[in-house]
Length: 119
Image (cartoon, rainbow, N blue to C red; front, side, top):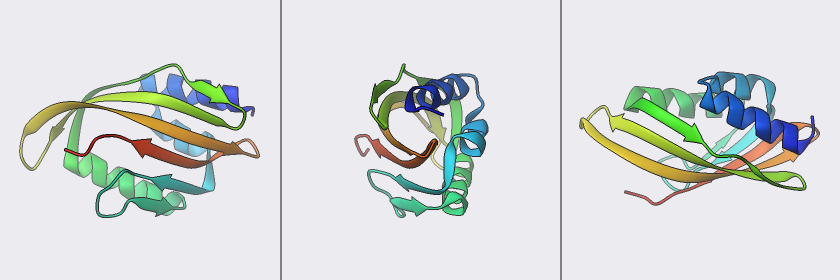
């Protein structure tokens, strides 16, 4: 798949609640995922990325999400993600936005990095 097709699929599937499909079909098994902060800011490989996703589901209730149209440049693309969530331990509901930057190699996403303000 070309970068534009991967980017379009990621946005479409995120917006239709099919995030798991992104990991199954678009991501390299050797994906590197980088967060702006937190206890484990770098996840390497699909097993670590799955653990990160499990932590998110245990920690946050997601009310809604929206991904913007992608901006593509060669083997890179970016997407603005908006989320309305409740932090389960505290009950605090908030909205946030982040920019996801993705690198594509050999038809798969090999790196993702998220940029957002820390609370």
